[in-house]
Image (cartoon, rainbow over all chains, first blue to last red; front, side):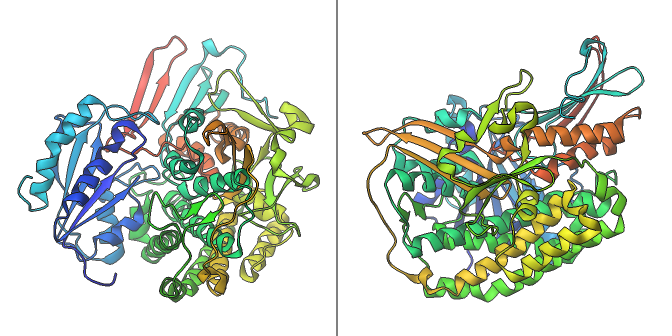
Length: 152
Length: 486
């Protein structure tokens, strides 16, 4: 990696054309518009092994994703590298990205947190559900706080 | 052979095992096995859902939006959809591409091939191949590979990363790229971008060659199993260049029988429907394509890396072509006929992609400024490309208001539908029949499916959305056992 790296990385995961899966990219757009200093925002459909390399030189990482098993509209939980996962699809869970970083670089990954937004519907071509739109509104100030910025 | 184990005589009397969804297979797939009271397999089916909404998703949109929109169909190979759509819409705008535009698109495509094949082999399949199909499930994943084979895992990550960088420089950004547009491209490479990619591409060639040899060693270490696992005879379909060379971006359609004899060759894909039709089965949401001249029972075929590498006349890059010839000769040709040969062929294609990227990067046309072409407007366009998993067809009809009024997409997973079903039946017959079902045995089914690497195009991966559940259900519907892996 070359050049100056922003100390805070926000990974927004999801697909704008898949109903509530869009919550991550939508919050990312808002965050990019806010232009917070020291914060880099990366958006992708899914997390993959190469995303481990994006963790280099970060001080903290925030994963923003739709979450089907959230008990509240927005959940916030610390993440740790997970060496014991048994089941993956084409993509990785955030804890698996951290573990891949640890295995590939031999270093401890930066502190990381998941901001999960409760999601229900993932139909192709569908818009955001009312429930997910409300959850996004709840998530926004929490995302700003995680990025070290006061609510806007 | 195609009918065996497809439909049991009395399914109501049989126990049912459901594997849903398949692990490390994108989207939603389900395998059902029906067993009699002695555990003999009477029926095995692969069900794949959720395809036909794609066409409705596209209809009514202005045609110029389509190359960007279709990238949202698939989280794994969005670039393939992007390019196939552009190829179809080139016809609609009447364009013959400039040299710079075609070479930038080819570079983007080979970047996609390289990153997708690296992901497939190192991340999805190497755990099964390096540790064994029924090894400890907690270790059988990329993290397990990273622990036991750190260099292999690291190379897999960096190969994937390099392919993504090629895509970023040609498509404009990592995802939702807009680099290719109907009639051409909207950017070429800068000298700095070319130099940055050139710096790493020789290392990628070396690692890709190592990966080919790793697969060869795996074959050598367990030849009997690799030779026979899920292996069957089938027809094949792929694009080839006018001189018979492997060409993943453009060419004519070549169909062969199981011995390699040509059924048709260099067929113009603009009228693919004269060669290919789609059958429907009551038990599956996905269609079953077949070669028209052979009919639906006998005309099913296989697409993808194994077909392309074994049915082209040669590969137009030297290292990959040498590896191809060794693959074809290995074990008297049996590796090239085996289902696990997909992995070997896939790594040969990855090597070819790395070599092709290197060659393109030395071509000054990549720095050109003549990016767009146009011509006589047409109402219809067909684009075909060899995506990482196989032949991908995009077909659009556009009205006078520039809106897409009809779309037809045939993706590689659909082409391989029957072949994958035959593969799992071979596995069920050989490994599961009459035995107590264990996770390791069920994983054999998934290994067969993963050799094809069906992309179920879900492009959704919310946290907690993809558990793997296995249910054993008695003939009367009673659930005997359920196992779920998160």
